[in-house]
Image (tube, rainbow, N blue to C red; front, top):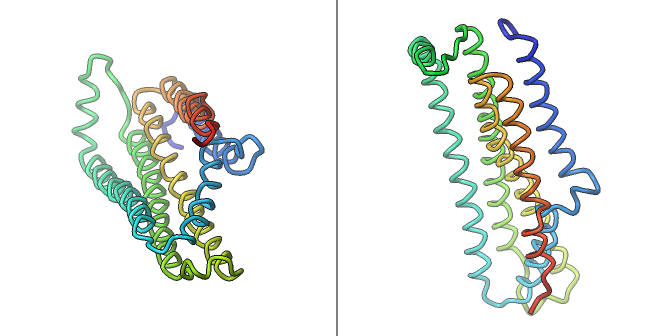
Length: 229
């Protein structure tokens, strides 16, 4: 990467390893199976089993709609950020001048600045695709929910298979949503690189610590382990 120092390269490598490593840990390891995200997958399956026994499924439709709306919000936000990043690229000279006049005096070259901004652009393009695909999968889940048999057929094998299919589709949608949200968090760490490589390294470590605490922290475990009343 032209114009970047060795420390910049090390910081970027640490960022990539942290992001990919955390994703692998969450989705493929035994530890990840104890995470809040993974435990919610079991509740998706339970939700669909209970949905199968209900005659009126308006509540289930409203829940699915809220999941779609939340995903659509993040997808549209990603598009807005992408537009902002293109604006940054167009105003490179102005931004470099502003940075140089700040009290801490960030000095960088045009090539380095544009390289970093393009990296941020790639992150948010990835984020948009994850959220938009998650939204589409939730749509598929809503269609599959509508196709599930009536409550009077809940004990039939075909009904149980249909409910399991909806659960698996919403679980897949949730997994892509989690990946998109994870990219959002790591994009915040990436912003530290615009100051210096040391802040980039520290911000990446801080993001990993925060999102890991949310997945494995005592507060979330207490809620999930609390027995049903």
